[in-house]
Image (cartoon, rainbow, N blue to C red; front, side):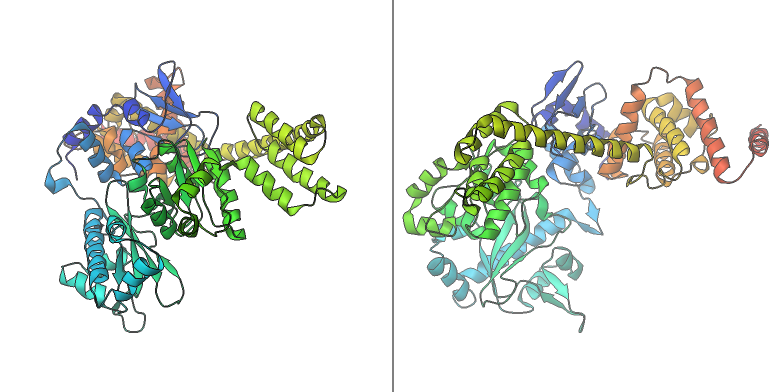
Length: 587
């Protein structure tokens, strides 16, 4: 555990608005700041930073907490790694004996060391004339890569052996549990022995923006399936939150990023001078990855394969990237199925021209619709019109929507007013559906249905309200927390009805009576990010109320005790008698 005084100093030196302002553009809103939330897609800012309480909260998705919680979410790291990042930012040293955070008994630092050792092993195998001949021939001859590019990306080769990596890593002192946790090996169900997952494959290390090797991808040499094997999620890797080659591309991506489908496309583009190319990791783009793009650039050029699967993937990418405010363009490569093949055939300058001539997402979609319909035929033109109008109706910006209406009218050869009227009709329906959804969501929220943080909230609505009021005031006001923890106010964990409320209460009291004392900055060690967000929510809501005096606090406690008694089938008279008995015992 990192010493409490070190954590407090780190939080003190890292102003929440300054740190968050390095990720998103904050705008002053009275004494606070606002911005579009970096953790979910939205157009109207619902993300608020509160300098007075050194905290943040999103009224849209519920993310909230302090500067440590923000870095945990933004950088996809655990509590200790977030503290380390902030410590480095503030120039604070953390003692060695408190530097590791472990998950399932295996530290992130240990897995980083294991991945680095494995990458070195794979690289040695690739450059070994006997073991790596097939892999090197594939990279040099089939894919046309030079040695500089191979070394730049740290490419390697895994021998066609079940135990080569296992034996090497165990000889270096790594345990079987660590090898399994890193998704490098697996245990045989028949023999119980470990075996290598990557066999007879060219290896592509996945490196995060801090320079850590977090995972691997492997391309098989013998045509067996799967063609590409990618690391599953591990304690140091979430494939939905990383991008291949972003560690290089982030340095040159201010103007634009190029989104490709695979490792080799990215490597070919980097070798040709396009170092702003990245790729997802064996899956379609996710909303988390879209938000990563938004951190680094304002424009993304999608360069997917020209087949149907590639075009469908491009449509999804356009939607997700558009939701986070990115200017999306699509490149169409004629005469080649992917950028690697195109550059080999036509050269880098021709590809650069394709980049500069890339179409907007709307132009790409409208071209696709027109290619699927013969608009010279009336019924086909009606179908194309319906699809295009539906697409335009989803555009939020009025000016942008009107430009698209003019363009659609021209290609469909119909009056612009006709298109505008149809779009208006469709938008009215969309607005109606949205309002209905809001009403349903509000109703569910009122009843606490679907609450994943506090699963007991829906069952005990009134008790949960009392608990949230009590906990919020204990978090905000030191005197209430102190009085309860010292027994000066009668309230115990047994008075709580929901499991989450009880756990929060116990943690607050334990921290208050500890030698170091209570500190908001350490709550992230005891609760998940979603739970921290819930605590921020109840605090924000409590601060909005005008009365937070002791009378209100005691009334909330009395109401909670009554609700607890009701759940146990205790009458009002019995409850009163119990309280009197408790007071008498204390006297």
